[in-house]
Amino acid sequence: MSISHIQICYQLLQTRPTGEKRYQLLQTTHSSAHARNRRLVPTRLLQQFTGTACSTSRAVRNARFHLRSLYDCTALTWPHSRLSRTALQDLEVWAHFQYDIQLNGVPLFTSPTSRALYTDASGGVGWGGVLPPLPMQERLCRAHAAAPHEPSTALHHRAGVELPADLWRTSANEAGLWDADLLPLHINFKELRAVHCSLLAWRSDLQGHRVLLFCDNTTVVQLLRKGTSRSPLLMAELCQVWRLLIDMQVDLVPVYIPSGDNPADFPSRRSQSAEWTFHAGTRATLSRLSSSVFTLDPFATPATAMAPTYCSLRAGERCIANDGM
Image 1 (spheres, rainbow, N blue to C red):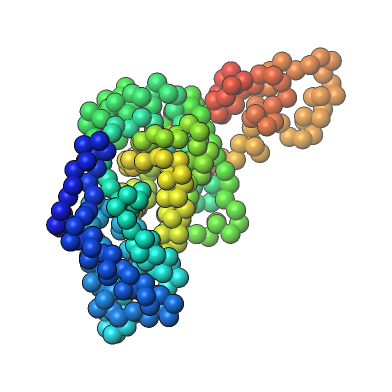
Image 2 (tube, rainbow, N blue to C red):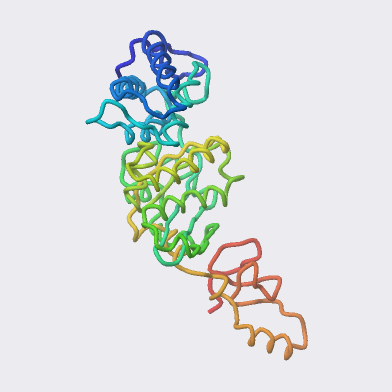
């Protein structure tokens, strides 16, 4: 790490760039920010700034994320570079860089994960997420703490989960369909959106935790690890995810899981509100012919259940089985 001085704070156990490197960073940023209204900056000055800022990436949280747009604007064959609107916003972040801001500092010793989440997306249907029961989440997190670099198959075996693909049957499930304007977009974007939607769905359960995230898309796993991509579409979505993570005080630890083992694959490919209930005409006929109140609905969801208890593909408070047959 090319930082001239690292101060160790025993209370926070964090590394923070100080001294000459931080001074150069602030001086270069303000020089670049002086030209932000006209958007043209000397290419050499922009290169000096991005090089200085990049050298702090091991100690500055999301440093590469806030540099991607500046790299994209650097015109290597021209004396001046034109900054985009996104680049100006990222430059403003660096212009207000201070020692005590949230952006500055990463833990010297990372804490273990305490929650586990599965996400997946299908190209033509929607997204899905699976949140296992808390005891199973704790086993997965303990297994990851014991061997953080093990592949997901070995990790699940260590945690005593032999068939992870079937976890959706006994876990909390969330799913949603893609809007028409999202259907043509690349699957990498949809996989990242699935992470975003799952975080929103279980916001209260994941708040303040370090979350072990299982995802079957290698691009999204690497994107969440590195915090940067050459794709403007992915960077725009990643920006929304970062803001949500900061607001939730959540750290993600992404782990790749093969598609065949991902329990979130099933809910991402099925529209349960349409399939797990009787047809409208059948529902009306059953209600008309019945002489008493229904006590069990064999095919239902929480929104379509015709009885106090029901069978469904999703685990739920009133769900007594996963399949009425």
